[in-house]
Image: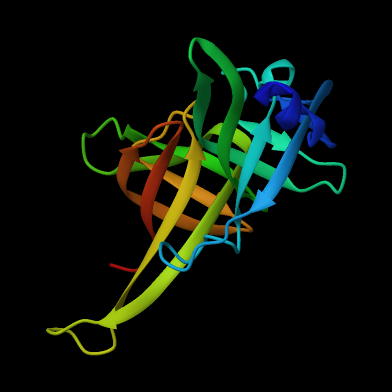
Length: 197
């Protein structure tokens, strides 16, 4: 039996792909398995999964999200090809479950005719952006009483335009973008809740 046949045999979960606007039904079937690791980031085993796909079930490179029949949505973090001599026999994807929908907002500033002051208006650049975020524990400021620093880490798809002059709105809460780190298939964004240092 060829390795590709063995991998394809276990591809039993149908998936849908997201094109940035709508979910598309596909003929693709994959195997979604949990991490079994003791060391690593805390999301291993909790939110992250390994997706195995045979040659006929390769997820197109442009796809950033997949959805299972149980309506679980995953963002694709990375992909690796398994090769036997010159033949690709399987594809492994690391995915992370996302359960939040964000808006990416640009703040446009208009200067008053006098040149002093002006107005600020919000422009929604991207709506309905699937994302995941984690909050890291706060640390009290050393110089100012009553101030604590809390960091948030977001996973945003590469296709979304985001920089430090934007804000992310999730569930009515605004987050100021502090850093944008491009990774393999995604952007990791460090942010803080609006109004906090």
